Image 1 (spheres, rainbow, N blue to C red):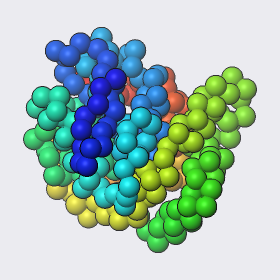
Image 2 (image 1 turned 120 degrees about the vertical axis):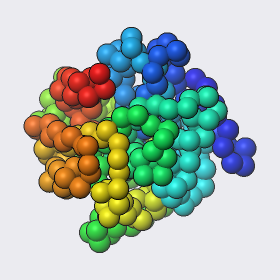
Image 3 (image 1 turned 135 degrees about the vertical axis):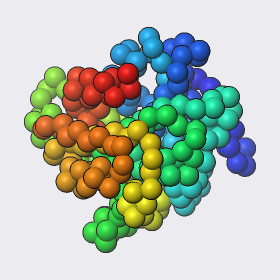
Image 4 (image 1 turned 90 degrees about the vertical axis):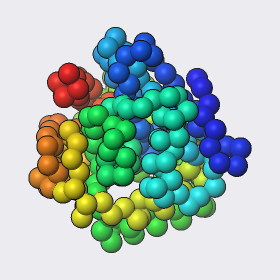
Length: 264
């Protein structure tokens, strides 16, 4: 693992897999996870790509920077990582808040990215979602991130996946990642999510963009993501049947096939 310095003596933790001379792919995690959420993607990509994963500020082994955060801050963290690693241009894959970060990057730094994959993400945050973030902030202020573990797992995976005992290790890892997220990190990102407002700008994106939705995702509904694709020129849209929010894990075979076809 490598550390990249950010403001006030803080740092972001980074994992690099594959040959550094190959085309780069940057992976951006969902809220309440860390770089381990992408393990099922590493082996299929590392032969032909250099994979850069990072823990979002306040998550995993990155510094628990005090918030609130903004999407501008989260996007600048990606550019800081790229500059530190001398990466001029890369592909980008983000899920949930990582997918929302991908939208801002495609709008503000189009020349730094090749193909962009936005997964399980919204482009706006209507009042019911803002209310849900306020509720989660209140829970974490009282109980820490342990207070949102069970609710997160219910949202992240379909009931069929959660109740299959073959997936117990994945569920346990997911719970561990949530608990390992600092309260600063979760609340900081929640404040950013409350301000999400990229929907009106999607028509100005001019990048090769792939949107991937989960059929059973309640947080980033498939219909909302399909509409995002309609608004984005040169974009493609895929909905994975039966999958909920963390679709790269729940439906890893379909997800991997989909991203390989798009990247190659």
